[in-house]
Image (cartoon, rainbow, N blue to C red):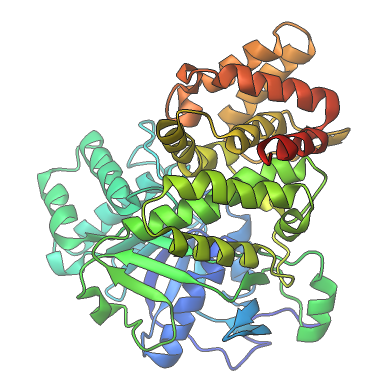
Length: 488
C-alpha cells in the first residue's frame, strides 16, 4: 500500500509560504491548517504554512516524508445530523528541523510572502527562559525562537515597517498575544538588540490574543487499520477532530482584509474583546477536561466519552460544571447552561475517542490556568471550598504518583515538575514524610500553581484527607461517597 505524499496524491496543490507555524501537533493541524485549506479553496487566501516543532524534531521528519500532507477526519454533528467525513490537508508546505536546518529558518525570515505567525506550544510554552541566547541554534523556548526569527526579519528588510507580521498565538493563557509580546521585548532587552528593533516590534507587528475551540483527539490509534483500508494509503499523521470549531481573534477589524474568513462558513470571529468568550470556554470546556482527567483515569476509564457516560464520573463532571464552575461566571445563567449542555454533548460524541492521557499533558500548568481561578472565585463568593474541584486537585496530586494500581502512568510534563512529584512520593513511600506533609509541600509550590495554595484555609487538610482515602479505598469508591454527600 502506498504512503501518502504528493506523488501518491497528485491532485494536491502548493501555495506560497504565508504562515510560520510553531507547533506540529494534532490541534494546529486539525484546526488552523484546516482553516487555511478552507480559505485557499473559497477565499483565495493563497497561502501555506511552514511548520516548526517547538521541542524535538521527530514529527517534522514524518511531516516532511509525507511532503506536508495528512488526512483529517471530522466527526460529529453538522447542521443537525451526524457526519463522518475526511479530506487530505495540503496547506502545509514543509517542516524545518531547527537542529539541522537552522539556516533555512533564517532564510525564511527574509521571505516577502510571509505575513502570519501562529503557535500552540501548550500553556507552558509561552515562558521566559533567561538562559536562551540569540546565538543559540536553536533557542530552547518558543518566545526566544520567535524573537530570533523577528530579529533576522528586521535585518533582512532593513527595519521596513511594512514587513512585520500578524502574530496569533493559540495557547490557552489569558491575553496570550500580549504576554508573548512582553516576553519578546524582554529578550530584546536581554540580548541588547537595540531600540530600533524594539520600535519595529511595536510599529510593524500586530500581536493578536486569540481563543480556540475544537476537540482534536489526534491520531486514531484504535481505528487506524479500519481507516487505512478506507483510505487506501498509509498516513502516519492522520488526525481526528470534531465538527464544531470556534476561533475568536482579538484584533483590528482591518484584519478581515488579510484574513478573509467572512462568508466562508468558518466560525472565526475578529473582535475587540475576547474576554467573555475566553472565560466561558476556558473554565467550562477546558476546565472540565482538566478536572475530569485524573478522576476518570484513576477510575480506570480511558476516554472523555467513557467519563461523561460513567454513572459516577459523569455525575461528578456535570455537577462540577453546574454547581461549581457556572456560579463563578458572569453572564446570563441560561446562556451559560446552554453552553455547558453543548459542551457535555460534545464530550459524549461517539465518533471521537479523546484519550484522557492525551489531555494530561502538562496537567499542573493547565490546572493552574483553567481551574485555580474557579476555585478561588467560588471560595470568595460562597465562603467555602468547592468540594468537587478540591477532589479533582487531590486526584491530580495522586495521578502524579505515576501509578494506576500496579500499572505505571506515562506522565507527560516538564522535567522539573515530574522530578518534584517523584521525589515527594518516594519520600512518602519510604515513610520519611506523612501524607499531610506531602500535601503541604505540593500546595506551597507556587511555581506549580502561580501562588501558595497552602495559604488557603482548610485546603491542606481536605486534600490530605482525600489522598488518604484514595490511598485506602481507591478513587472510584471515594468519588461515589463524594457524589452521595454533596448531592444530598
